[in-house]
Length: 423
Image 1: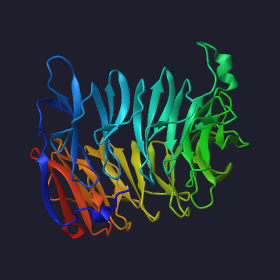
Image 2: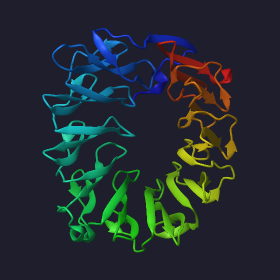
Image 3: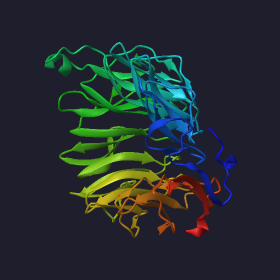
Image 4: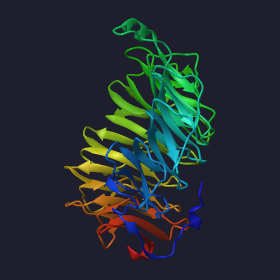
């Protein structure tokens, strides 16, 4: 991972490139994406050609030397490498900084990056069977169906729901017997279930939990292939406690939702919904998005529900690095806003994007879109003094004293470093 302290954190505005700049003869440029350090902006480019479609990537206006029949889903890795899904001669591969992986497939999608390391994974299809590739190397067996993949923190493993038996059309009896399991790097568990979803690794990458359906009507959690003994009306998203390895999951029983830990209630089932659990790094605090009253959405920590609520939905929850604070983005009366630490910040917007906490957990910033399409950054409840054509989520300096604004301003891509005190 690239050390963010090595980035340019000198306060000021830096023009990188005109947004529509292209070193070649381009027919069009697609939606831009910005690199984590703000130094690059990339766009898929359709190169003008009278005989065939040719695509590549334009990085700060400079085209890659490599060209492809198709090119889509450009993404920057956390350390600043640019990836894209590209095809040539009807075969697909991942291209990293202009260099294609050697492995080719019938199709690829869903690029993912390891949280702790430089690994990249993609979902792949070959000869109508499905699997995954990590850093250009395919996992073991392929299957008729794979979904809900998750990359281990160090990037050495992919866990995914897989279909272990063929289900002929209209064969409901084979389906009811259980044809789905979890495979880690292509090796499936011995146990099968009617359905599986929401796979999750623990912090060590050694254990996997998944939501399962043991019959058409019964739900529970399976950890390393072994299901909990109790059954529930519905369940969501198991998560491991990073401290002690226990597993929590939202569950529905008697028509109401609560939170389970290792198959025992820790938050009684009294709510209309309970999902998106998230632990603090030390495992001391458990957060979740909850609906305590019908149509009213908010957050809860260790079972304590916030008083402030959104009327329509909570789209995203962000927990601070120290695990003591949280922010939720939500919608009321078709307008988007934010609640931080159970305090609703002033301001409603056409759109609001996930909150970002500073490394020291003291500051919160997020990108918003106003009426008319202009965007800006809100920091600790204060809007930046200028609107832009487009902004990406803010980036805090490692010392939490500055914030980087990556933006399109008057047709120019810029990076602006601003002291926290300027907001």
